[in-house]
Length: 192
Image (cartoon, rainbow, N blue to C red):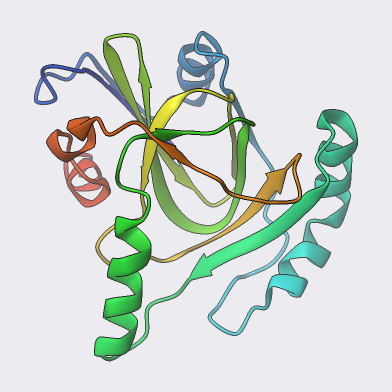
């Protein structure tokens, strides 16, 4: 189940809200213009699952979303743990690419078919950490300052939706704010 933790931008240790209540999460995110939803899981995802397998499994939902919102490109991003230093280096590089605050000129839309990842949304003087899990659909409005953490040992598969053919293009803010907030693993540890 999704987790939302809300913190002041200048005081990340102060938790203003921490909830797994889907209705409350939806209400909080809607106030930011963020669409939050859930799709039924259609397939078990393993390291052998191909992007084509996932696109086929979620074709009807993906087509409906594309038609509704004008997306022209849907792709799949996934990471699955594997033994050895090569995978660890690849995972660390992938993780670091998204850990700095940035924004996009189009909405960032993700459906998590497997695993976990955290979007940190920086709105006004507040940071909203949204831990997404399998089944979650999140649409972050264009221009929203944010960053993403996939954890120290990434394991996830997500469909990404784009209105432009060039796919993911981040415009980094150069604000070091992301370095001061708890990472995904710490957020999850606090929920146990």
